[in-house]
Amino acid sequence: MNIVNFTPVPAFLGGALIGLAVVLFFVFNGRLIGISGITSNFLLTKKNRFDNFLFIVGLIIGPILYRSFTSQEINISISNSFFLLSVAGLLVGVGTRIGGGCTSGHGISGIGRFSLRSIIATITFMIVGIFTVLVKNLV
Amino acid sequence: MSKIISLVCGIIFGIGLTVSQMIDPAKVLGFLNIFENWDPSLAFVMIGALIISSPFFHLFKNNKKPIFTKSFNYTVNKKINKKLIIGSSLFGAGWGLAGLCPGPAIASLALLNINSAVFVVAMFVGFYLVKLSEPTTQAR
Image (cartoon, rainbow over all chains, first blue to last red; front, side):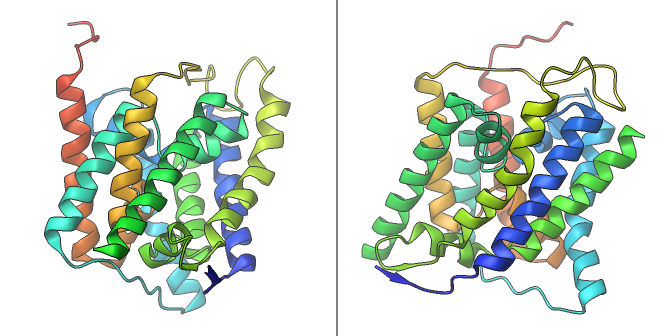
């Protein structure tokens, strides 16, 4: 194992911002942030629909605001195979709904409340994610 | 006021994903590539988020109500069952395939990237399929 591209300081600071959003949503609105939950509820249920909509709008304009204030380009590299992206998206959509959460809902809001269920979910999706990358590298 | 908080929380979350570079699937795949060239950054994102959020969960958990809404609105589910493990495993497989999870996938729509849009549409289909397969619990 080699350590590469490690950026601990921006990672920690960005993580702290994510934590701040989680705190504000909890203390002011009494809700937990889980992006898979907020998004699927926005699409499929009426409850809190406008709040969920505004959160999603914010999630999309956040990077745009960051880019305009810092004049830094945001570079991402993402698979360009539509087939792979569709399979992955489908798995993530189905999996997060069956498992009740994603990286934010289980990984932050759940672990932050010391929920054993969320700790087990997070360990599970990390192990399977690591295994998937391992297999992908072999193929 | 709760509407403004929802928008602001989304914005802060989106900026957090950008600052931490988790909006970039390559960073996430680097974290999952533990046996070759490992990028531990994602662990530091989680540590940062948990250090900030965890104390507040515990400080506020005995409060009667949140500041802007009538009551706390979340379900405490403690079930550790097959659904949790199967769901989380399917999610992990999709996460490892593309390096995208729901937050970064939606935030990266800001970059007008067609690839993240394809992923997001497929994810929505996934949400819908699970909803379809569930027995309806809503009142008519």
